[in-house]
Length: 297
Image 1 (cartoon, rainbow, N blue to C red):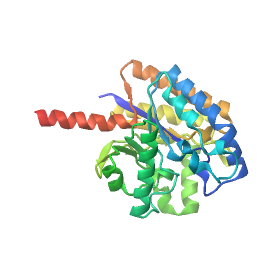
Image 2: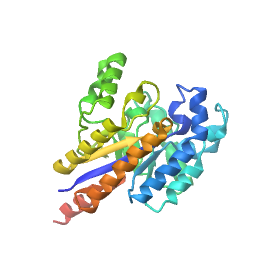
Image 3: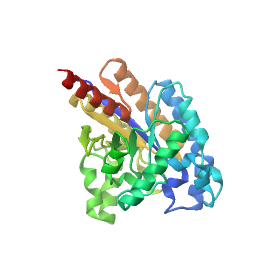
Image 4: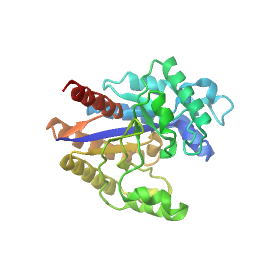
């Protein structure tokens, strides 16, 4: 059985930092996000790679940007989604929450309101809604997502780095940084059904390159990407690679070179039938097909 590669992108603009906002973040969300997304779309078209773009719904809601710091363009960017839809490669557009609020801290009523907002935005823009990526990967209220018709979500990253949140703030940050800076192999994920949704856990984040993270050298990231893809191929499991456009704000040339290198390698593997490139929503459709086949038998 061929392994699978899934790539998901958390498209946030300044919404991803609403609670830790700085003038630099507001400026970069306005000036850097759009050219980065254009370049990403170009690379995915070059290598015929479909991905899941998990979009904060407020990015498509002008009213939500009113009164926010900085320029409206730091918060509202329907043209980015238009570019994704116009790409030669057919991508999936999923959700990254309504306004990037954390589901593990919400009441059921708050989560229901956020989901209703997401559904309205997707309806208004004629967008399907199958897949969900939790803001800050803070999983919660899976039952409400399933009731609303969502089909799949990205669970917390696999491997030993999953222990980081349980170690406290300081130790957790050390573990997370060590995982990024050292060439530990990222573990492939096994998609499984949880609370009526297909859980496709993350395998590896491509980190940003600002501050101390500038010492996460491209050679290490490439080694980890190659090991993750090879492990998925051997095991028949999924290598779920993810990132944000903001992870390209700093040292963008190096970051794009790493992504280009990886996409070329993945496309070669896919052309030989060793890897299947899947969006998150495709796992739910596959589960439907399998259930239908069992019922027919």
